[in-house]
Length: 141
Image 1 (tube, helix red, strand yellow):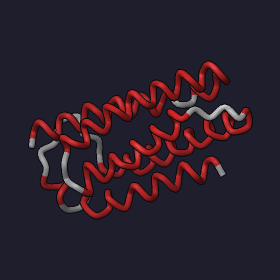
Image 2 (cartoon, helix red, strand yellow; image 1 turned 120 degrees about the vertical axis):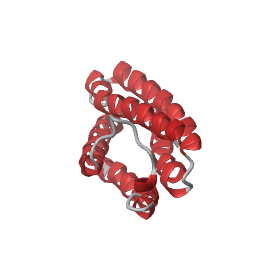
Image 3 (tube, rainbow, N blue to C red; image 1 turned 90 degrees about the horizontal axis):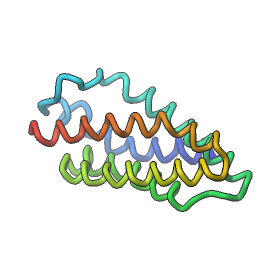
């Protein structure tokens, strides 16, 4: 159930993405380090899976930090800010808050059960990269 919860958030967020990824997004200037479009789906699917594992481990211990739910909500809303509202500046603010919430989640999870914090590190790394990408798209456009 934990994995399905996280994957469902990803699917719901993709509603905003699908509406603009093949139209508005293709018209934007992007930095040289922009990955190929096909990479985003598999990466996010894996990251939501890892979030679900961490959530399950903490659920078993009844130690779910509110930061987990905050970061999941911010993750969801980023897609709407960037793709739905077509506002890279607002999305950048959102992703900075997301980045902070992920760090807090990792810290809280790590203190309770180290593997649950460590398994979220790829998520932090990807969101760090996505933050740079979001900022570059905002500046270039």
